[in-house]
Length: 129
Image 1 (cartoon, rainbow, N blue to C red):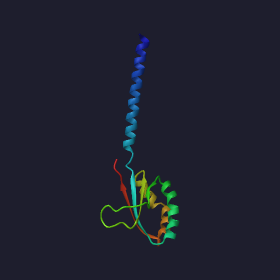
Image 2: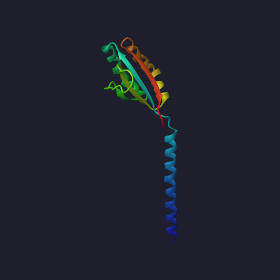
Image 3: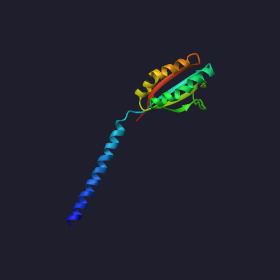
Image 4: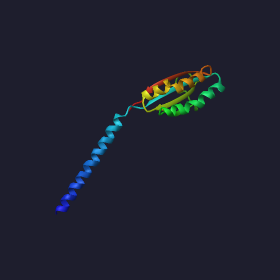
Protein backbone atom coordinates (compact mmCIF):
# COMPACT_ATOMS: atom_id res chain seq x y z
CA UNK A 1 0.00 0.00 0.00
CA UNK A 2 2.86 2.33 0.87
CA UNK A 3 4.52 1.74 -2.52
CA UNK A 4 1.20 2.56 -4.26
CA UNK A 5 0.98 5.82 -2.31
CA UNK A 6 4.59 6.65 -3.18
CA UNK A 7 3.89 5.93 -6.87
CA UNK A 8 0.85 8.21 -6.82
CA UNK A 9 2.92 10.98 -5.22
CA UNK A 10 5.68 10.62 -7.83
CA UNK A 11 3.11 10.65 -10.62
CA UNK A 12 1.54 13.84 -9.23
CA UNK A 13 4.96 15.50 -9.00
CA UNK A 14 5.67 14.50 -12.61
CA UNK A 15 2.39 16.02 -13.79
CA UNK A 16 3.12 19.25 -11.90
CA UNK A 17 6.60 19.45 -13.48
CA UNK A 18 5.18 19.02 -16.98
CA UNK A 19 2.62 21.78 -16.36
CA UNK A 20 5.27 24.13 -14.94
CA UNK A 21 7.61 23.52 -17.89
CA UNK A 22 4.78 24.23 -20.34
CA UNK A 23 3.92 27.47 -18.54
CA UNK A 24 7.58 28.55 -18.66
CA UNK A 25 7.78 27.72 -22.37
CA UNK A 26 4.65 29.75 -23.17
CA UNK A 27 5.92 32.68 -21.08
CA UNK A 28 9.23 32.70 -22.96
CA UNK A 29 7.49 32.66 -26.33
CA UNK A 30 5.18 35.53 -25.45
CA UNK A 31 8.13 37.57 -24.13
CA UNK A 32 9.87 37.45 -27.51
CA UNK A 33 9.49 40.66 -29.52
CA UNK A 34 7.40 40.50 -32.68
CA UNK A 35 9.25 39.83 -35.90
CA UNK A 36 9.91 42.77 -38.20
CA UNK A 37 9.96 43.13 -41.95
CA UNK A 38 11.77 45.44 -44.31
CA UNK A 39 9.91 46.04 -47.56
CA UNK A 40 12.00 47.47 -50.37
CA UNK A 41 10.96 48.93 -53.70
CA UNK A 42 13.94 49.62 -55.92
CA UNK A 43 14.12 51.09 -59.40
CA UNK A 44 17.31 49.74 -60.93
CA UNK A 45 19.06 52.17 -63.29
CA UNK A 46 22.41 50.37 -63.65
CA UNK A 47 21.98 46.59 -63.61
CA UNK A 48 25.70 45.78 -63.59
CA UNK A 49 26.47 47.95 -60.56
CA UNK A 50 23.29 46.82 -58.80
CA UNK A 51 24.38 43.19 -59.24
CA UNK A 52 27.55 43.94 -57.26
CA UNK A 53 25.46 45.37 -54.44
CA UNK A 54 23.07 42.39 -54.58
CA UNK A 55 25.99 39.97 -54.08
CA UNK A 56 26.93 41.59 -50.75
CA UNK A 57 23.55 41.92 -49.09
CA UNK A 58 22.66 38.25 -48.27
CA UNK A 59 25.60 37.75 -45.90
CA UNK A 60 24.92 41.06 -44.16
CA UNK A 61 21.22 40.29 -43.79
CA UNK A 62 22.08 36.89 -42.27
CA UNK A 63 24.59 38.44 -39.85
CA UNK A 64 21.74 40.40 -38.26
CA UNK A 65 19.42 37.40 -38.05
CA UNK A 66 17.48 38.28 -41.17
CA UNK A 67 16.39 36.31 -44.17
CA UNK A 68 14.91 37.03 -47.58
CA UNK A 69 11.22 36.19 -47.96
CA UNK A 70 10.96 37.64 -51.46
CA UNK A 71 13.72 38.91 -53.70
CA UNK A 72 12.73 40.37 -57.06
CA UNK A 73 10.31 37.58 -57.84
CA UNK A 74 7.30 37.91 -60.08
CA UNK A 75 4.87 40.60 -58.92
CA UNK A 76 1.24 41.31 -59.68
CA UNK A 77 -0.31 44.68 -58.88
CA UNK A 78 -3.66 43.99 -57.24
CA UNK A 79 -4.68 47.61 -56.72
CA UNK A 80 -3.39 51.02 -57.71
CA UNK A 81 -0.97 51.97 -60.46
CA UNK A 82 1.13 49.13 -61.86
CA UNK A 83 4.28 48.45 -59.84
CA UNK A 84 7.41 48.87 -61.90
CA UNK A 85 9.90 48.51 -59.08
CA UNK A 86 11.90 45.51 -57.95
CA UNK A 87 10.34 44.30 -54.66
CA UNK A 88 12.29 42.72 -51.80
CA UNK A 89 10.91 41.55 -48.45
CA UNK A 90 13.24 40.76 -45.53
CA UNK A 91 12.34 39.24 -42.16
CA UNK A 92 14.22 39.99 -38.92
CA UNK A 93 13.78 38.71 -35.34
CA UNK A 94 12.78 42.22 -34.17
CA UNK A 95 12.43 45.82 -35.31
CA UNK A 96 15.65 46.61 -33.45
CA UNK A 97 17.55 43.94 -35.43
CA UNK A 98 16.15 45.31 -38.68
CA UNK A 99 17.35 48.80 -37.76
CA UNK A 100 20.74 47.45 -36.67
CA UNK A 101 21.10 45.75 -40.06
CA UNK A 102 20.22 48.89 -42.00
CA UNK A 103 22.51 51.12 -39.92
CA UNK A 104 25.41 48.65 -39.73
CA UNK A 105 28.83 49.59 -41.10
CA UNK A 106 28.67 46.57 -43.43
CA UNK A 107 25.36 47.56 -44.98
CA UNK A 108 26.32 51.24 -45.12
CA UNK A 109 29.28 50.20 -47.29
CA UNK A 110 27.02 48.02 -49.46
CA UNK A 111 24.55 50.90 -49.89
CA UNK A 112 27.36 52.99 -51.36
CA UNK A 113 27.57 50.45 -54.20
CA UNK A 114 23.86 50.91 -54.82
CA UNK A 115 24.27 54.68 -55.22
CA UNK A 116 23.92 55.50 -58.89
CA UNK A 117 22.62 51.98 -59.59
CA UNK A 118 19.11 52.31 -58.16
CA UNK A 119 16.75 54.51 -56.25
CA UNK A 120 15.05 52.70 -53.41
CA UNK A 121 12.56 53.03 -50.60
CA UNK A 122 13.10 50.89 -47.47
CA UNK A 123 10.28 50.55 -44.96
CA UNK A 124 10.66 48.64 -41.69
CA UNK A 125 7.44 47.40 -40.11
CA UNK A 126 6.85 45.42 -36.94
CA UNK A 127 4.79 42.26 -37.36
CA UNK A 128 1.91 41.14 -35.17
CA UNK A 129 2.32 38.61 -32.38
